[in-house]
Image (cartoon, rainbow, N blue to C red; front, top):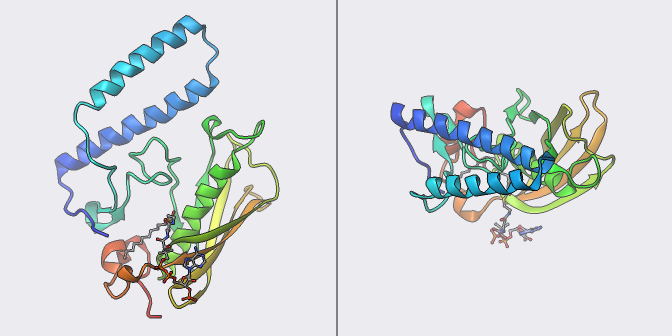
Length: 225
Ligand SMILES: CCCCCCCCCCCCCCCC(=O)SCCNC(=O)CCNC(=O)[C@H](O)C(C)(C)COP(=O)(O)OP(=O)(O)OC[C@H]1O[C@@H](n2cnc3c(N)ncnc32)[C@H](O)[C@@H]1OP(=O)(O)O
């Protein structure tokens, strides 16, 4: 994994503009799924969007931004589908590492995440939990990629309401690490629970991932196995 370095003031200003663009794109997506304006208006807006898409596409990167060091050397992943502030697909989820090295995120799903009537698509909940479990194993010093993810959907997950997602490392064996997590109501009532097995790719070992994920982020470096 490579990591981009040294943000400049110009680059930060450009990123702020991209973050705002993504925020507006998210609002647009919600407006699309909820709109009830006449068909002629829908058609007119679609034409305007086609023109805007062409303007943005005039200069393209090969792929979204990935891990990079932000101001103060703090790692970030602004293009990530779950946490990326510059990715319209992301909530974006803001994950905090607790002093006990568990992870926690306060979140609220939006209409664009709808699946069954009045509730969030199960795959969307799975995506959030996949990421959160991945953050938990990384926070414990065992970063890896998802090998298996098991979900138990206990109650419908609502959108438009404050929710809390938490996860924690449970154990590790060789390159395999297990974690558990859940999405819950603020009173702790679990709505969806997940357990997962993460595998540290062999290439990630022995290279001091702490240099990349950074102790400044509160994440532990890769632990000895
Ligand atoms: C250094 C920088 C760090 C930065 C850190 C930042 C972290 C900041 C937080 C980010 C949080 C992101 C969280 C989202 C995480 C995704 O969404 S990741 C994307 C989804 N996952 C993938 O794309 C993974 C695709 N699969 C693969 O790349 C490979 O199959 C794997 C998982 C790396 C395994 O390949 P491998 O290294 O060749 O492993 P292999 O030697 O076959 O097996 C090793 C062991 O694992 C077991 N195993 C392998 N695969 C599986 C499986 N699927 N199920 C069960 N067991 C398995 C094997 O049985 C074996 O066990 P033992 O025999 O040792 O007991």
